Image (tube, rainbow, N blue to C red; front, side, top):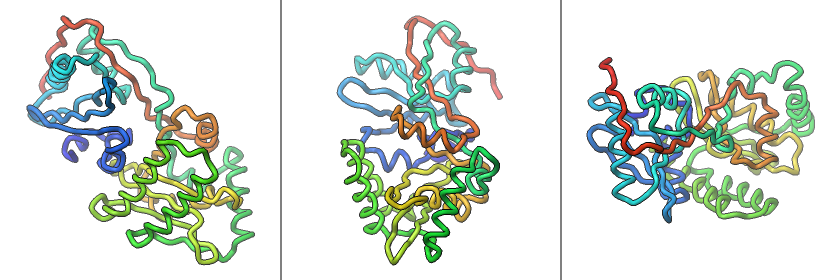
Length: 294
């Protein structure tokens, strides 16, 4: 998949192989390549959809759309692309101006932060975050930051289990636990990076991510002990500083429409969003224009 993703510096987490691998069971993910176009399918029980097709060097985006329409028709499913970025929408509107409708998927917008902001916590906008970090450092001067590896799997799963006990358990949360385990099981193969805060001999916070592109990291999991003031803020800052200082941006993924999670993500003052759109076919007889050669 990497050569297809490398065609553009995508910002969505779905364009990181690790995301697809870790969540393959939860979203019933599958992939295929036809005519040098990568297709990624998700969903089940008649609600399947595709991500926008990823055309390789020897194919075109328009051909990918044609193949996608054929697949939906063969499966007896309504045409639905999800996770389309604004530039994909603009391209489709240019090539196929009357064929599709486009709907913002705000709950799945991904939060993109400047790495330097998460490290430095500058100005009034980050004053509360810096206060939490300073309070943690004053109260727990002996804390230790460690780089994670496969050997820390059980300790991090225990942190996640304790977190689950404090929150309403849902199927998604149980799937997240499976995803965390899978990240550690295939740590080196996936190129994962992780950091943790150890306090009094135990891990009390951890974060795991990977490079999305050379300028951006994406964080897949972050868990901390909510009873310890500043635990989330300290792992957020330390992980950004220790693991991702060579990046310009960090993608902390979506809020899924959960009010508390949205408030927490907005409180870190994102630089921008990786916007996502749903795309539906409205004119089955519509033909897209041929793309000009590069």
